[in-house]
Image (tube, rainbow, N blue to C red):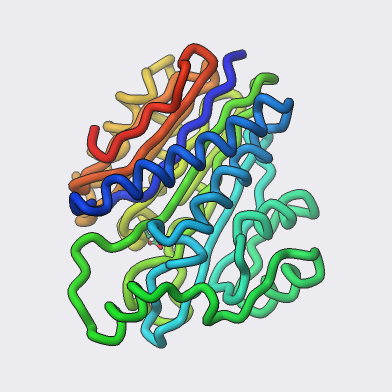
Length: 290
Ligand code: ASP
């Protein structure tokens, strides 16, 4: 099996002055996940490593630098799923530096979605890196929130999909939600089938975009279903986005890897930052537009 990794930095509009930061961040995330795979790590370990890089990068809407809710707070959702159908998820957590790592710890414990205080308690008990909730607020986000600016190039959700050398697939997604979302609102990112899905027999997917549109079309599972019959992931990804656009309003994007290691992605926003790598390539490919 050819190990393969793909990451996204969200379906969004990327202004010219943010292109370089999106390239750098997505490339660094692929490299972190790739190093795990080269070291013999599992797909889930590679997904976690890649997403941790994006969560620590203020360019993206995940953990540090995430968009602020109605109360001016960072509130985070993340989930991870393995192709064995094992999964873990957190939602509406605060003061957690790497929600994806907490989701993974939940997965390794027993599959469930933990929210708010319960998730934060689990994070503390399992030794996750905690911080003051204010420490995750970036200056740019705070200024925009205070001035109630209309944000064109809002930061956006991150995700990663991996096929490892033993043919195991995994997907992960991490987000700060939507700009000024109601306190307590949870979108698609931590919801299995919507923000992510993985099935070793078919493929794996991570999505991004308007959660309220992604949830009713179960976007990640829809994209996986389009892979059936050996359809190429690029075509399946486009079909999933077309299906969403035909049924609901909203912007969305998805990244896919099938069980042969072929990749695909599609989006209906202006841009989507994407980077990927496999053993046939000598360096990471990175894009902000397809
Ligand atoms: N899907 C995320 C949410 O609705 C946000 C995004 O990807 O832009 O919470």
